Structure formats: structure tokens, C-alpha cells
Amino acid sequence: MNNLYEKMYNMRANDPPSASNTPEKPEVPKNTIAQVLKVIGWIIIILGVVYGFVLGFTKPTADEINYPNLYSDSEQFNAQALAISSITGTIAGLLFIAISEIITLLFKNLNAQNKLIDLLFKCGKEE
Image 1 (cartoon, rainbow, N blue to C red):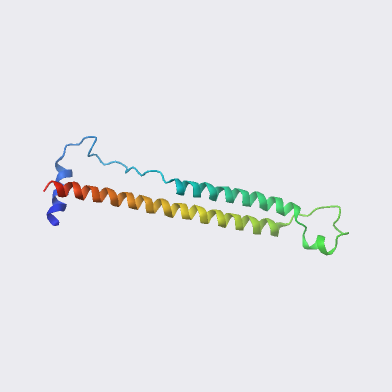
Image 2 (image 1 turned 180 degrees about the vertical axis):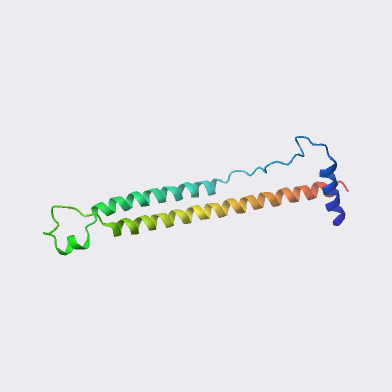
């Protein structure tokens, strides 16, 4: 097995630089599931914040419910409704983005393993 690693090292070291053996950034095919989850996450974050502002301006506060005549002419801003809905939307969106990043990392790891296996088979056939 050690001989195989030496062959791989010598194969890379003795080749003149060309387009086929120069180190390059590995090509990772795009994972559409991860991209869709990331887009869904950003949409959830944006809609959560927008919904928080809408709910903050339209939901009555506790004072308006308890004393309707006192605040009937003016609408108050409900910061609690804004905070709860915005934070909830942001957390839900970040979970989607985190899952998409995990999928992307696993996909890159699988791609690197497949390239290593291909390289091992290529060196093994030359023996």
C-alpha cells in the first residue's frame, strides 16, 4: 500500500506542468436541493421581517384592548409583535440556510472522496 502512495507522489512530481496536472480548484457540481433550500431560507427571513412590521402596526396593544376609548383615535406600534414574528421568521430561515450549507459540505466531501477513489484506481491500474 505504501508503494501505491509513492507511485502517486512520483506521478505528480515527475510530470511537467500542463493543463492536466496543474493544481486547480476542484469542480463541484451544483446541488440544486441546497440552492433551493437556501433561496427558501432567504424568502422566509424577508417575509418574516415584513410580516413583523405589518403585524407590529396592525395588531392592537394590550392598552388598546383594555381601554378601547382611550386609544381609539391613534394606533400604537406593537413592538412585541414585531420582535416575536421577526425573530421567529429569522430563526426559521436560518435553519433552512444551515441545512443547505450542510448538504453543500456533504456534497463537496463526497465529490472529493470520489476523486480520490478515481486517482487510486488510476494508480492501481499502472502497477
